[in-house]
Amino acid sequence: TDVARSEFVRGRRVFIRADLNVPLDSQGRIAEDTRILASLPCIRMALEAGAAVMVSSHLGRPKEGTFEPKDSLAPVARRLGELLGCDVPLVSGWLDGVDVNAGQVVLLENCRINVGEKSNDLELSRQMAQLCDVYVNDAFGTAHRAEATTYGIAEFAPIACVGPLLASEVEAITRALTAPKRPLVAIVAGSKVSTKLSILRSLASRVDRLIVGGGIANTFMLAAGLPIGKSLAEPTMVEEALAVMDTMRVRGAEVPIPVDVVTARSFAADATATVKPAADVAPDDLILDIGPITATQWAAQLGQAGSIVWNGPVGVFEFPAFENGTRTLARAIAASSAFSIAGGGDTLAAIARYGIASDLGYICTGGGAFLEMLEGRTLPALEALERRGV
Ligand code: 3PG
Image (cartoon, rainbow, N blue to C red; front, side, top):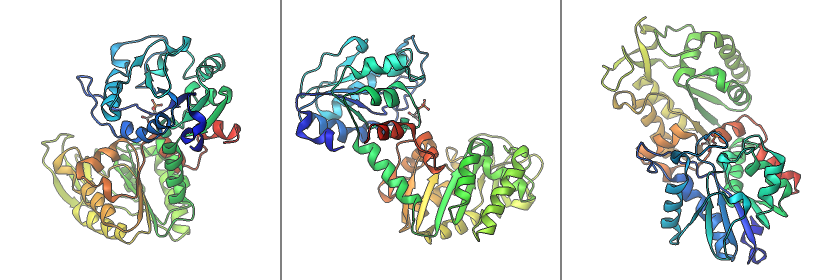
């Protein structure tokens, strides 16, 4: 970070890997620009220090070696230009050299079009490193990927350093998980226990309360012997859910199970919502939210938390009839004096919907990277920088 800021970069070529992988709507317009906003401090820092700035990012998951208009970072270049108040040219075919002067910024077209990006190809990494004097990794959202722009280039660039966003995200998550103010409450929601099992296991040995939501919660309800009707769940993961609950119980910690739920007969915005005790779920029911008694109880528990880690909505909050649980918990997190950290695409959408961004301790720009940190794994991008002594 200091290198990027310092006089040292005046007149030098600085390659900033940012995560500008933003959602686009059906017209190709930017639906949500949090990641672009979050990347500005680093870009401004380098520009103000007089560097020739090249910003690189991926967008989506294009097939390497091909290019379709939907893969283009053109909307991002326009938005960056508006935010920075200057022209931000989009450079295609940049591997052969980039024309940029000191005090200027260009955006390099989608790095995942380059063959070898995903596989962290050595030659590609070397070629990209030759474009710059200083490589700055500021892409927290992609820090869990060992790709040429997030990993390989760090080895070959003359100087490699960490950007301010990447540094602050890692610091905030580490702070929430290492010696946190207790009670530490984690909310982990998602459709499958299997995809989040290692996170659940890892949190089970650290948190004081583990609130689960979505299909994960349904599997835990099954494990607790409750009926779940036709709800999304993984019966094969019941043993794993029981093991997580046991780990928590032995530590005097808890995975709370809903006492009431909101059900419907179909997964639709206009489906009739019925509140019922969790024990009364019928064979035809789909559980689409936690019930109001559960929401109030859990909100009270969040109010007493010392730290909160939030990943995932507890109900189908996109449908107004099934948003009460997520909204109640979101507001409780916002009102709580706990240090709260939230991350993940759906979570960011819920935060935006309830307008609580400014009431949270830290909002993470990463989804997968956030989850891997919760799991206690070392992010490859950090490992690459560490190998350079950063
Ligand atoms: C994300 O959106 O989580 C990051 O930009 C990483 O994208 P990826 O999952 O396609 O690597």
